[in-house]
Length: 259
Ligand code: MF3
Ligand code: CO
Ligand code: CO
Image 1: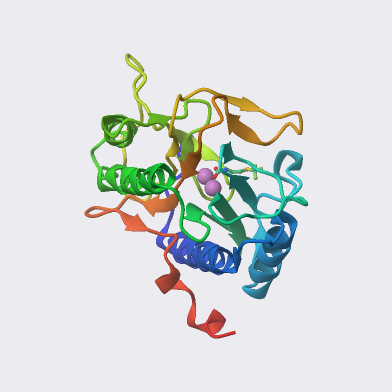
Image 2: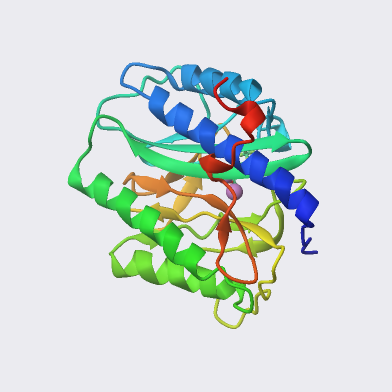
């Protein structure tokens, strides 16, 4: 069931989205060679708390960390631990917060101190794929129009989209209907986009093959070929006109600014 949000709910979702976006920026700025992913997760927890929110991921299906930190060939759901971030790594950070009962969900991949050409192209293509998808998030279009835009852009640049994990509706819970795949499933019909729908668009892009596997920790998803992967995500509102990005730092409530 797809839930359309009221204006009152959207005001809270703008705040939740802004908190997620600001925390993601704060965590991105904290990343540097030598810090452990556990230290990054602890820092994220303190920033989430600072803005009066809670992690939407901690405890979700027993997920044990505050944010997802996925390094290099790790695709999504990387677990924080003693691993030290190194110069040249690319780090996918996924932040989900709950604020006044609503979720903001946003992710980005950052390069640590510059990186090789392949990794930088991967980040650039994944970023642009997200915006290709967002630009099709228009009332009257269908979810598949977003999926097609993402897949076409990624594959025309020689990379591949992950099939096992998809974008999703966002609201009172992290994952609502509809699913928002980053690929087209021929013959499958998809929901029509309507004003008031709030969805997370989140391309997961592999430099090599699309095939992934889950590690024995039951969470960390890695590429099978060991090549790097990138992830970019925004929570987006379908409106009567242009899509509105809800995970936008500018919407941070004035009461939470400069704290
Ligand atoms: N990466 C997922 C998303 O953005 C959510 C992670 S759920 C968790 O939709 F439990 F793994 F944290
Ligand atoms: Co996310
Ligand atoms: Co998401």
